[in-house]
Length: 328
Image 1 (cartoon, rainbow, N blue to C red):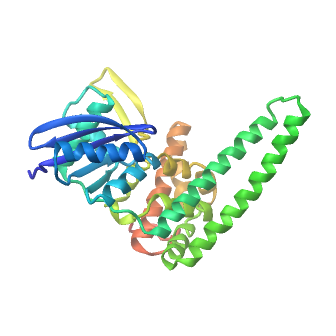
Image 2: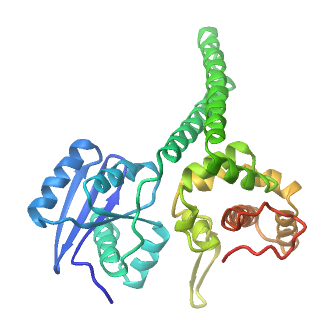
Image 3: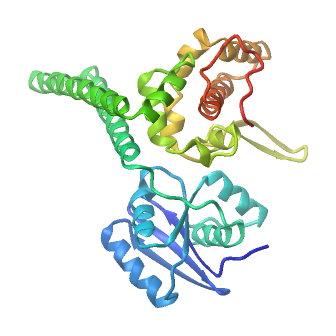
């Protein structure tokens, strides 16, 4: 097995990140703030302990690691952004029981050194812009939901109620404006427009879901199979079984990109009614007496498999083509 002599494992969190540097068999550990000041301190630390460019590896956990990944890439380090499910499986294969931020960084560093995952590069500027716009739209919708909940929470103050109504109206306008900006951006780029058309050919996936999907899955070719994409979204079932004594129902792993997982929650409701493939799956599982959450997870996973299929084949979804060849 090939072994990278200088590998940097990064366990990323919102406010800080832990690192483990493997350098010719020795290891160094440190922790830094997850901001530009912390990034500069990391650079000085790396120069002190390695003096060379390294290969850095981190889990794909949403926006917390985006800025650091870009920073390291621009500093001419090699960067890999890995599905957390792969790191979890690697940890289990090494029978690593301790789980702390430092231990996670060490596991990621060892994974990077021994497995040499695919290198990452920043997506094109228009894809980064799409990601920023769709994430902002998600945030505004979450704000609107919170205000709607406050409106019916029993607040007695007329002044507060009036302010809530005013804020909801403001958010409504901002949401419409942002949706228009997202549509305009997609229309300006033929690659995005074609991919959006492919995704929306799937019953259950609308314009906003397609746009957000393209913002989160910036390069479909980084996934070798639909199963890998589902794992990245945290939609693969996890099992808990030990001999005959412990056997729990399978649940979604929830390892990976939470935005991508959340993205398919609402479309499933429409897909169960209007997408014949998803509808057949749901009907079959209901007859088998499967729990609601298991059925919902399977339907979400089926949708993401279909999304992978149309993007990889470049062919619109055909509900009548039962043997649709979706790359595995």
